[in-house]
Image (cartoon, rainbow, N blue to C red; front, side, top):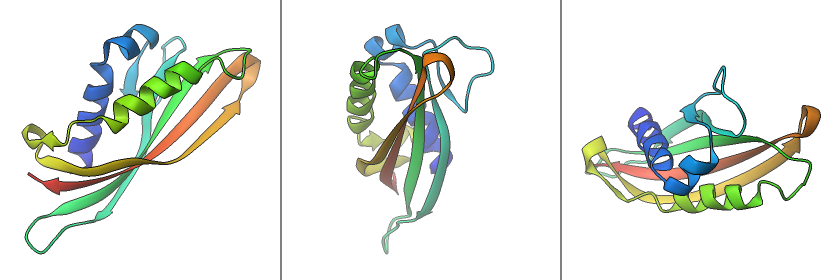
Length: 131
């Protein structure tokens, strides 16, 4: 379910018109040759979260947004758009083999790297059950 969840989340983020217009890529792992800004699902881990009758997983994912800005608030609107999109992932993912029981932000981290490159990491916990 973890791999299916990752694929569904990337597809969901990629299909948002506002994010597609604002980002040069929405991918798994860091893109090798893509201009900023881009969003990557950089890591995930899962544990058992099933019931007596249904298989399930608790999946933790980290999304990394990389962008360039001299302004600390330069990416705030983009981060808000990403957060809203993730939290509105449709629960019915039966085509992907699971159903989302819950999804929520665990933590966020922001940092400035070289030459006005900023990075925001958003970590989420999703609890999913087999469809």
